[in-house]
Length: 237
Image 1 (spheres, helix red, strand yellow):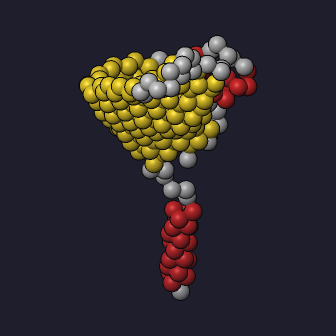
Image 2: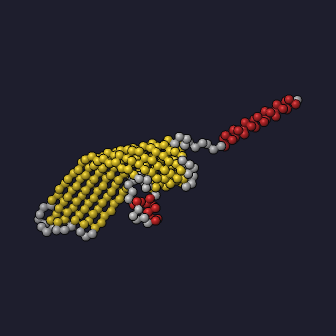
Image 3: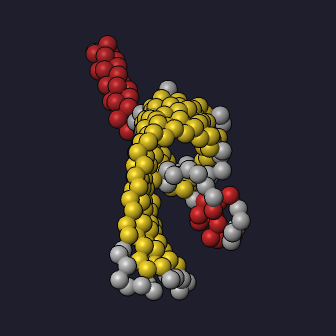
């Protein structure tokens, strides 16, 4: 009888231990497999708040306003995306010269990167990007004098390229990160420009209106090294 009781107690204890282990496994947090970062450029905000009118914040050459990356938590390898779109329409008229300008620029990049954890707060990374850019700009200028000269300029530039980049980030909190980056990109492209110039003689109305048209169709190449002067405010999740 004693042996039977001991056997029952042993089975009960064994079942309790197994059940407790199953509960612990089910209730334990799952290991994070991916780490996401999404951010926006914050230099313009800094310039507005602190009124840095002559700072580098107002003369940036980094067109990627929004960035996103997703990395494997264990290895640090991941994909990165950057995008920037500029639409700016403005006009001015001083009584002699009237000018209208429409800027429509798009920049995209997609690449791979490797992230390195330097400490609990600091991380760094390096990678390679592929680039695409498209600029479509229009300007209409009218100069009023004895002759009225109207100049209409349409400019389209399409670029492809790639290059290497590196970044450094600091975690303000587990969810909020500030980062900067540097890169060297090389791009090839094609520029198409059409310029129409129309002249009207106001003093002699009978004179014909003369219009001349010139076009530019050529290749463009550029290599740009961007210093780490752009700061991104990011959310990590």
